[in-house]
Amino acid sequence: MKFGKTMLFSTLLAAGTGLALAGTTDAHAAETYTVQAGDTLSKISIKFVGDNSLVSQIASDNSISDINMIFEGQQLSIGGASQAPAQQAPVQQEAYQAPVQQAAPVQETYQAPVQQTQTYQAPAQTQTAAAAPATTSSAKEWIAQRESSGSYSATNGQYIGRYQLSASYLNGDYSPANQERVADQYVTSRYGSWEGAQAFWMANGWY
Image (cartoon, rainbow, N blue to C red; front, side, top):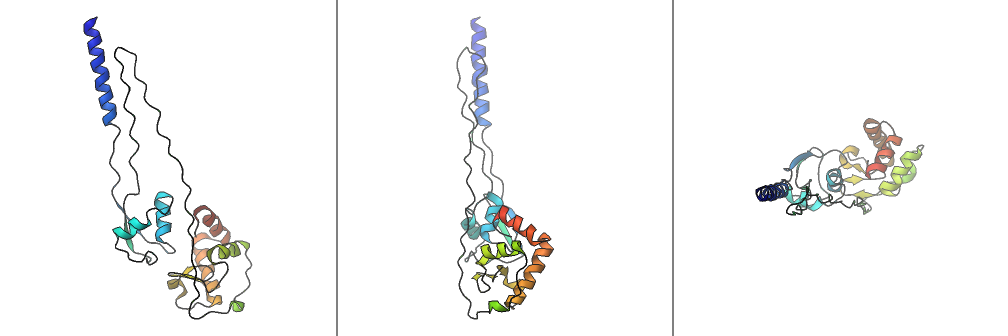
């Protein structure tokens, strides 16, 4: 039986080496992403990894000097969106014993997405809020309060007014009446209703 014990030990050693080599894998290659209406680098980062940790990397990879200036239709290279899986712990080898038990899989700690804080500044020409039509949808008002605290004069980079619409959507007319009209058209075409837009905002932190 001495010959049989030697063969068993060699088999266990070879199995442990195979398991150790199987624990590595390559990270995914970079992806190309097309900027959509309403996107920011933070929103794009959240789409890929669940938080805004990729903002600096995306800006660096695409030579973006101002992280608030991206445009609809722009092609961005997104790299490092995936992570290599944790390596398995090496198998504890014991001579002349029954099959080896593998270590328990590594548990990852979930991190909640970081809420983006927006800073607003008044434009050179302030529009009169009194000219805007009355808000009839509670979902619409809910979104307005979270996007701009209800201000028609709020700005954040390329996003303007009460509903933080892209300047290209407003076509140079920042009046309250035009903001209301364009916001209704945008929400209807994309979500079907303000309630649908509200549900999307609650799930993603933007609409």
